[in-house]
Length: 176
Image 1 (tube, rainbow, N blue to C red):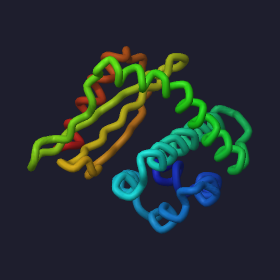
Image 2: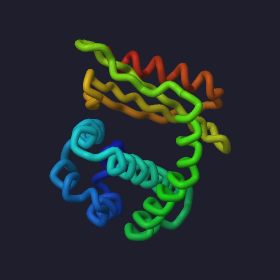
Image 3: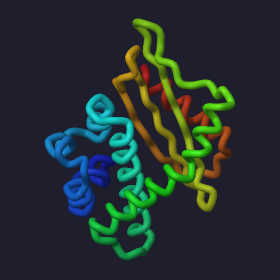
Image 4: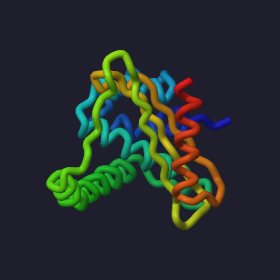
């Protein structure tokens, strides 16, 4: 059975993408660990920008795996890394103005949990052209360090609201 760790970290193409990336000095020794453990460790060690890069590249590798499963030719690791870096840069530029605007409008910002508590953060996404949905869970402690994380994908024609509800349900199960 194919695991998240295999797809995103251990398969030869993914491993080479990470070796080529600027994250390899931090990530290299962690590869034998499960993906969720690596994500938690990186959440403590990387800057926000580098953690964004890690998540963006992982998302890109997952997308590449799905494209290959559906008949596309696999791309070489350098092209995948280049595409990941380029698309992250584009996304950042496109949303920089949005983020500044939101800050000016007084949008609430994430607050850490009270001392002695954890916070359960969940998010979900619906792929518009298919019946694929995905969600993620992150559990930070009082100082904002990630102490637990998980993600999953499902097939089903769920609405965005239903997908958010599923994410919350799975997050609560994970937090138990």
